[in-house]
Image (cartoon, rainbow, N blue to C red; front, top):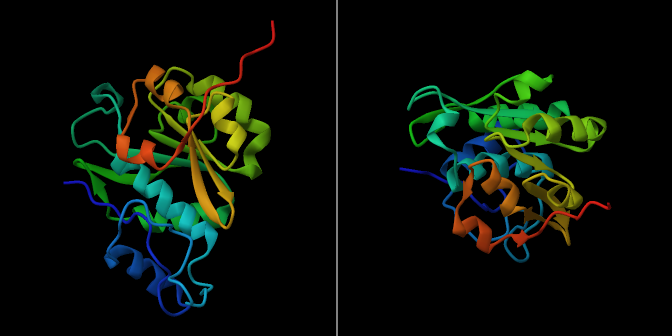
Length: 204
């Protein structure tokens, strides 16, 4: 059974360990805004935007289906990769620890070159790795790698999901066609709360 920590309010306190524990037990509801506390509640430093991004990335696995051929066995790990700042990698590793989706344990692996990018199931590229973006998209094109970035333009340039801060919250921009070409199916539940985009046409 799939579990989701999608869209949680801020945890109490300002201890990072308490924040992670809160994410593991807090009830969640698809469609609520993750980055906003209840009305009138003060923001706490413990639930930073970086932590929020890590939880979003965790949850994408629960709303995406990869082809069976993307896994060596039915219980093989679902591999996350992050070309991102160290803080995001640390939070993502913590969020994924001990988690399983559809029988696949979630793990964060090191992926620094073309061959390792192709082994990822979910590959996140943030602003710190933008110079490598074209290389990543070329290396993963047509392969069952869910590509995610923090740029809205990313999904219009051949990437699959842009996870973008707009109006004080994180929003998703999805290129469903790019995902389908790679054999990846995105749940209608996720598509309903996202903005669907198409790729820009290349000039002749």
